[in-house]
Length: 146
Image 1 (cartoon, rainbow, N blue to C red):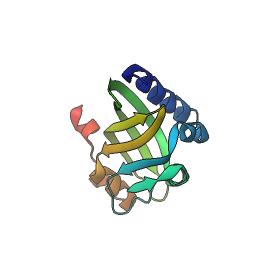
Image 2: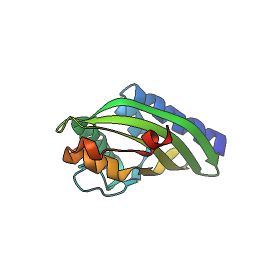
Image 3: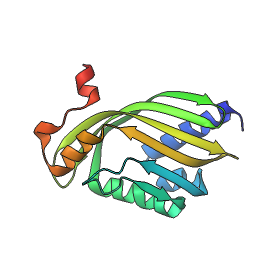
Image 4: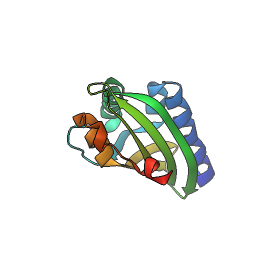
């Protein structure tokens, strides 16, 4: 696949996620996909997930612990087997009721028409504070920008 096809695949994944079709997202991943984010204290779905089954567990944990207030991909940049997506999100932690917002960057590696690697970069301090139930400490790069 060329970089434009890779970009279209990743855009399709976000469309499926937006519709709540996690099985559809998983179908776009290789069997041995590696899904990573910073390992954040208190955040149960942070860290590394290997394989489609574990990535499914990631999405189950995400949905079980947070509500999406908004999640917006903005830019899709493709080069070779990489697709970089920037965006912003606002979440509500179910256990604490605390909200947090953050800009984020996702980096996908696509091979043979499947996502083989996902890396997430976001405001880890805001997420950790919200999971601890400390809404006064929840400040984000999104809020600081405005």
